[in-house]
Length: 445
Length: 157
Image (cartoon, rainbow over all chains, first blue to last red; front, side, top):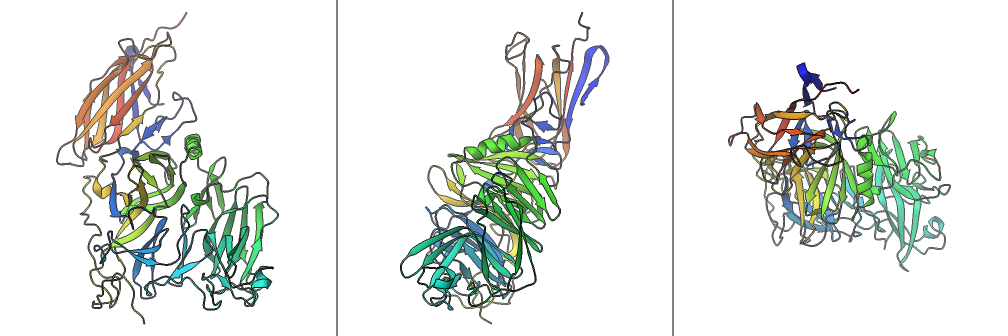
């Protein structure tokens, strides 16, 4: 109780240690002193109540009209780091040093298949190659070296995806099909040196027939991310979860185990060590109604932590824990999710920028004219809300590298520059990205 | 070994948000960048504190608010007290509420904790303090708030 009493009815009420966050599920007179019944655009920083950091434009979009569907950084085999992004036109690369020739933004197009509008991209780096898909009938890859992504499979001539089945095996894999087959999915992951695709869309190339397998998990051969044909390599395979009433809505792997999410359930899977049956699947609950993931892009992991949104709660899951984290802000978050005008996305973000730690699970909800962001502090276990007026979020936020290469490896120049010279190999010693100076907030906190 | 195409240096890292302008449709990548300060030019901020009944059914009078904040630069903040009366009216005995616009901090941020007295008062039940900061009004960081007041203490019959 914060009230301190003096003589003759004198009192003092102290508010401090602001780490309670939003509390909309108790009467405003009964909430703890360090909570708020409503607040916006104040962040909690080391128990101070601080107006949130300015939400500022850092880079123009890839083009003027096509919403970005995500971004990511990965290292290629030369140890060169690439920051890439996607829109419906394909894969793009960030060139923070300036505009590539002919470009209107710092992004240069690498191309690849057109992506599905409105679906955030699922991506996975494996053996220094980036793989991606977003619900279309293809899995593409880029190695950071070629000038364009790979969108076909040499083992299945005529296929239009890295994940493909040759004509000879097509009728065996999908009865009634002609082949070659190309497929992708809504979700992509990796476990046991095998790429995992979930909620599959498959194209029979000769006749254009598209098959949907919303309950299917399909994995590549062990260590061979271009081999998905289990008639040719038995360590590839698939599993249809037909004993459940819904579709796969997410995929995540933690350490040596994986979790497959549906709207009403979660299935746990682990490698068996057998190449014939590489995974053991166990439904945590195969229920008609139960805890699952209802917003496909709410699932995100950081280390051993996974967060996701079920129909009635927000959860944090670890290797040996399962915890409801919606707290007293849950009802406000759920109410806004119900009103979303776009695709809600979420991400666990450890730092805001290099050196500024703010480990939070961030749910972003487009609401017609603005985006509302709910941030959950993993450390302090509180929620706060921020609005970004006039802006709608179109993909998952992601921590990416943005430094300008000061010394490029030979040939490591933005596409189309025609520059072949350069200096030492490695990631160089560039400047400060977009010209940011040192922290100037006055408070090193 | 074949050479890489493009690349970035691992000297700068940001959490980027892919955004689209709701009116113009223009695409961009944004960041909540603390290096850009805590003074968003487009978004205002507000924070409502717990509603205080002090002693249920009695009417307290808040006579002073004392704020300890961190000086991150010049900021204009608005402190507002609101409440209710026992005749079911929103507002205090002397009006709808009490509000004061306060300028805090220094043009050259010191980073120090500083204390300021805010001269607002209100006699009402279910008193609530709210702090607002208009878009672009400066960076605000509050460490502690103290409400001072009195309340009738006579026992009910």
